[in-house]
Image 1 (cartoon, rainbow, N blue to C red):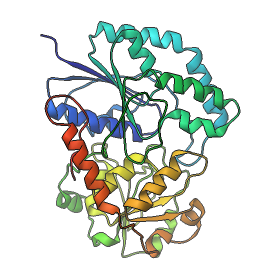
Image 2 (image 1 turned 135 degrees about the vertical axis):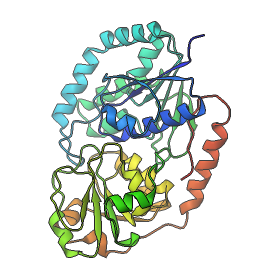
Image 3 (image 1 turned 120 degrees about the horizontal axis):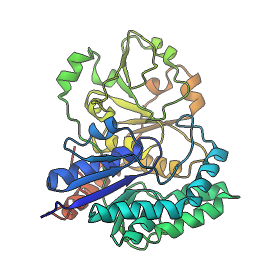
Image 4 (image 1 turned 180 degrees about the vertical axis):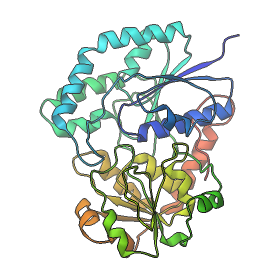
Length: 365
């Protein structure tokens, strides 16, 4: 009897979508090891393997562009529009080719985060399509106006062919989807013993003086590492391979390790607005220092949720790069709603994940 086959397609933008999709894939694999996973994405295989412990088929494919960015805060609108048009022009060929692949490989369910073209592909193959996200790309492009409006309308029409959306917390309405089910936070679980990491990276500062710097797969063009000299009794952790060698900076270059593995050792994480980092930190009740991000419609929603439900400090990019150690000196704030909202999301997600349904599950930290 053939194995049940799940095809997961991941949006072609940074690492955040790949992280949460891989977290879901890992949970599905744990619930039912017989399920064959096919991951269609341009995200690096090592990133997926850092979250998924078992086997999967890696299919390097891109069905969308997200936003073209030289770093996590800078967006290239012209290049994004050009790439969007190219994908739309090639849509008939992409749909036919991938629908043939799905049928040939007897895929039982298509799951996406969150390439718009995936729903028409699944429909052409006669296979159900489920998706998950906290926003749709139509929501990102529409405020940019002009020629992006037509692209946003096309994307919304694609989303309208999706059979079910699992809407994540910190979300926009996502009204283009005909069937929506709200679920809890996704994210990885720390997999390395904290003492092992502490010894390996010589992390001897107290937790409240240990800061994780995490800016996703696109990183930042400029990180003010020189300011860390102001805090010789603090320690900082970075995944930036180009970071300088400093006495109080620990550089992580091992692809098997992830930012979430260092969160239990950290007193706070410094990041930019991004669902995956926010979700993993909220699941662990870790304070977040976040930069603001202009021109990206998801950012205000993420910041609003963070202000309502988590320990937080919000600073501008100028404050981060210019004010020496703002994220160390300021106090953090937290709304009283905090953990009650997170725990409620966990309980709802666990109820939905019972049995062998293959639905998404959110494991508690």
